Amino acid sequence: MDLVKILDQLEDKYYEDPENQKAAVIAELLDLHMSIDDEDTLNRFCVLVAPRCGGIYIPYIFWDKLAAFLESEDQRAFLQEIISAFTQSDFEEEEQRKMKPLLITYMANEKQFEIDKLKTLIIDKAHPTVREYFNKLINFVRKNVRSTKMYSEKFEILKDIEPNFELLSLPITQLKEKFQRV
Image (tube, rainbow, N blue to C red; front, side, top):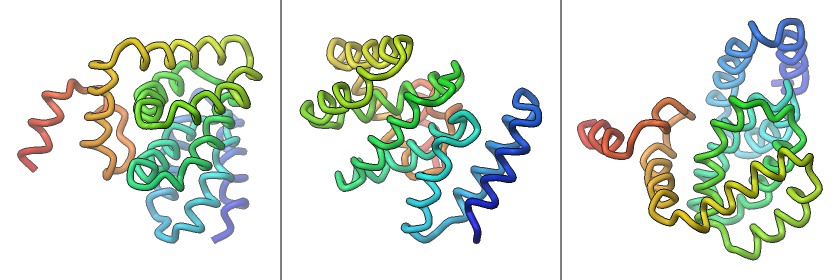
């Protein structure tokens, strides 16, 4: 599988008509992502896809790596690399909305030293709107322990399924009901 060639084709398709092709490109990337069963290929895919198409697929790979991080901290470097790509992406509202619960969950489960390092090395060097977004999230995590815990619980329930941001936006009570019946 030539990932670079596939990603080049999808990026060309996306940039021909970004507004109309966004959903189709995300669907194709998700299919490709879910078809990868080798960890080395998956890691390569995550690194290659992050800066593509203005960063539209970043929330999906962040979901995958966040789930892995909650199991093992050795995924930290990938998460930080994805956050760096996110700060340099087109930073569209939809991607910000999708990343919010994931970043809150990450920050709630990360060591303060690592968050401070991330802030110093990546966030503080980003565009002012990006800095403002991340500073709001950092302050939210610090000041809203109960809400932060709910974001983490919701992700914990969903982490083992393919990325689904509609489910992640549901109230925790609905998620618990839905997944206890399954």
